[in-house]
Image 1 (spheres, rainbow, N blue to C red):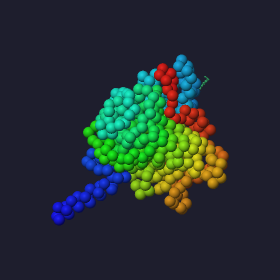
Image 2 (tube, rainbow, N blue to C red):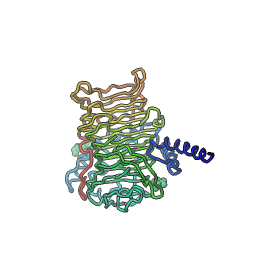
Image 3 (cartoon, rainbow, N blue to C red):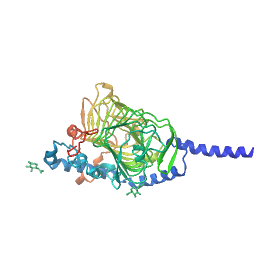
Image 4 (cartoon, rainbow, N blue to C red):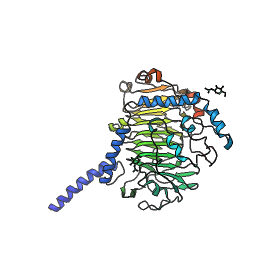
Length: 437
Ligand SMILES: *[C@@H]1O[C@H](CO)[C@@H](O)[C@H](O)[C@H]1NC(C)=O
Ligand SMILES: *[C@@H]1O[C@H](CO)[C@@H](O)[C@H](O)[C@H]1NC(C)=O
């Protein structure tokens, strides 16, 4: 009897941990995961900028400087030998018109702007070439596979030997200091499980096609060379960012996932999502998963130069708690609304183009949940220089963004009328070595 009780106590204790961790798909929140969670929290505190307006300002200044210096002309000249190149925004202009992108891939590591600008990914590591698209063993992945590459305990710059379709049989568990760089190959992550960036620092994901992602069944999955464990069913997001810091997602083409295309939750911060092309999906991006999780106050995310295209419904993004800078994106399609949220996030929308759908009931860009106007009127949701078309309107609240900024430093994002040009090359690019991309 005593032994039974003893076992019962252990069982109750274990299931308490289990329940707490279930949300994170970690079935057993063992010492390894506990340590990672602690380190992730520390990294978020370090990366969090107590003065986010300054980061937004800096971003705007860069866009402005860039467009003032004839740089398109300059880049056209530079690229003439290898063919035409029209780098149309300051992130792309950092690398796209160079003919040596294939031999100088790590140049990309210095190109991020916005809150994720310090992301360097696998810059300090070797190149790793993925040659094998299979994913048959999630506990002992074969060398040459993407799963093998992303769990190595040192920085790696991961590239692909040729075009490939990768169906992940379970979540792909990323580790610190990795770049997944699909330039030069058509790489599709599809019809399988998601990419998971959980309690991780410093990841660049560039140039992939990600579509038709399904929930993973869960099971034994290796998450580093010296640790694996049982994970519960995964959500079926395209990319799930959980308690992670310094993440840059650039030039992805994403569509039709089971849950969100990109979710960032549990105090993830220092993130930039840029130059992506999103299509055919309901709930596009979720920033902050719970109204009761105040840890998401640390969340700082830049959403820039993306094209929110055909077949999208809502959440571009849907925000809670954090500070979100939405700048120079092209919103050509939505069925319900574009930008929404609850629990007083700060949303600074600058120089975007919003084209409302024909449905007269869905002309509003914004949507606020779970709060009466008397409450949300103090949330800082601001629109500056946005181009609002076909009856689109942005309901602002809170106080003007600029009043808290040093006037001398206020250089605006490019106006919304420039957006088609700035986002012309959104999505995965077809890059050929020795030519501008
Ligand atoms: C831009 O280019 C034109 C023609 O090449 C030149 O006359 C002008 O001074 C340039 N402007 C700047 C800001 O460099
Ligand atoms: C990742 O890079 C940082 C900065 O170079 C380094 O301090 C850290 O130890 C690296 N982590 C791993 C797991 O390689």
